[in-house]
Length: 74
Image (cartoon, rainbow, N blue to C red; front, side):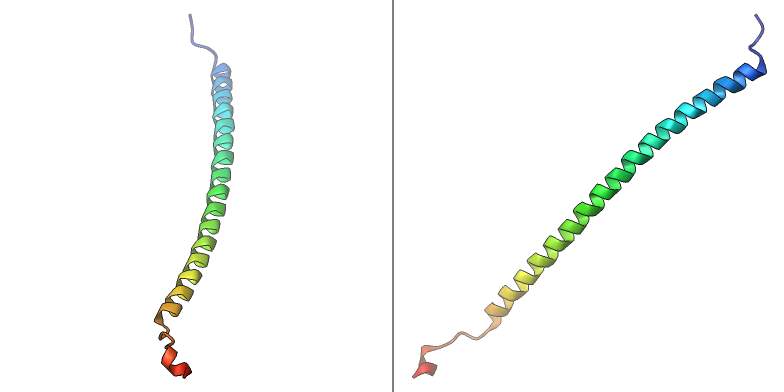
């Protein structure tokens, strides 16, 4: 039997390309959602880190202060 006409071959290839295009669109949507989620998580972690760093700095300042002595009060 002869090979399918060129038009049928082109149509089949176009169909495969459309399926692949739809798959890539779904993949892109999922990856975009992951990027958004990870960006939000990163921002949250940066905020928590800043807060922890601020608390640690405050604690270090308290440790560096000279201790108050009772002799100074008399």
